[in-house]
Image 1 (tube, helix red, strand yellow):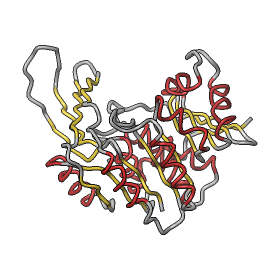
Image 2 (cartoon, helix red, strand yellow):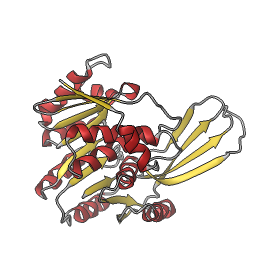
Image 3 (cartoon, helix red, strand yellow):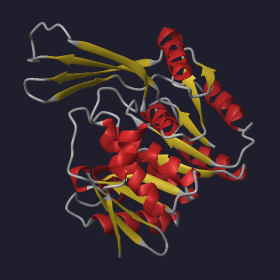
Image 4 (cartoon, one colour):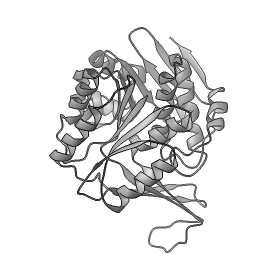
Length: 306
């Protein structure tokens, strides 16, 4: 079982337009709306790949109600903490003429101390051993140490904890030794106070020296790398890149945890993660790819060690 914890969910809206220029008026050719935010995107991706999942999310207002309905339609069980603040909306505009994607992301909705306490109570009812995936940026209203507290709570309940976040909250949580940290190269460099030109394996090893766990760094078209206490891996994709990258990093995490929770060796989980990320970018919307596409792409991913 993989529990995806969402403190900063959103309704994600993708507009497809023939052309987009600032200051103009345009009619979308297609519109896609889905439960979003990093954790829920990852949950949907893992579910597409057949993993046993649940989502625990702080949701408020009509957008929060939409998220509940959308996750139900996607077969993702949800335990919602009712919030006073309306859940945010994030918009992406994909232009066919330029191939560019314009993104308008609201800041995460405010979360109260009472809502955080309710979230911890819901999580404390976890019965099945497995993974917790705490994914997404922390709302500004949430104390910096809350992410670290959730790592400790998960460990106290016998869960393995994966984090995909950034900034001060992530830095503070490392000392509590999450089992897996997944970040992109920019986030990794920021986390350890290094330049973007720093060797990506060096970045990963600096993080692992604090956590003692597995570290995965995604690096755009150059694929991804991973380290643990004994091994290094590099995963390179097929060279196929889609027009809709929103949610590909989240789909990567969903695929990675789907593989690990399903008993795959780490190299196999890396292949499935890369397959999910690439398949996600082929179609509009985050985490709504076809499982067969992800599996076919994963079979072509090259993973090397050393």
